Length: 197
Ligand code: 5GP
Image (cartoon, rainbow, N blue to C red; front, side, top):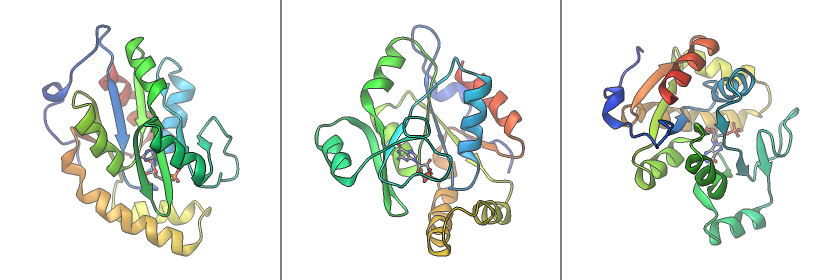
């Protein structure tokens, strides 16, 4: 799958500093969090939103770094208070983007990235049509399946759920402004950074 989608310039609006909200989405297992981790390391000038989730932490995940891990009750409260820019249920857990920090960073002209699922990307498209929506695609379906299984962090029924969601997400690729194929993490980072600035 080559890069595709509408012309990059067509859907991009920039703030006063030329920075814009960018959304990175794509099927579970495609490598979004690896890309985000590499961006965090190599491009500290980019601000990565930290989502809240009701999912339990995986080994090595730290509260406040990959996610804010919250209870169902706390998530309900955040939704009711309108504190989430978008949120979605994914494979049995809920995930959402805290609104205030995103608005603050954008107002300050900081390049801002959300790593969220398809349902969240659709909500951002509605509420912030100027955002750039980037789809991270796997080199092939087989590759996606083997990455999800190879992670070894989820039981089979969870993997099956994520694969089912992955089929739906792959079918939505054309809704995005453009696609990047995750063949090499460094390459994806370079292209993302170029798009964000
Ligand atoms: P994981 O459990 O593998 O960390 O994430 C599962 C899915 O939830 C991924 O597709 C990830 O992009 C998505 N996700 C993470 N944070 C958010 C969020 O704040 N909002 C939405 N809509 N999806 C999220």
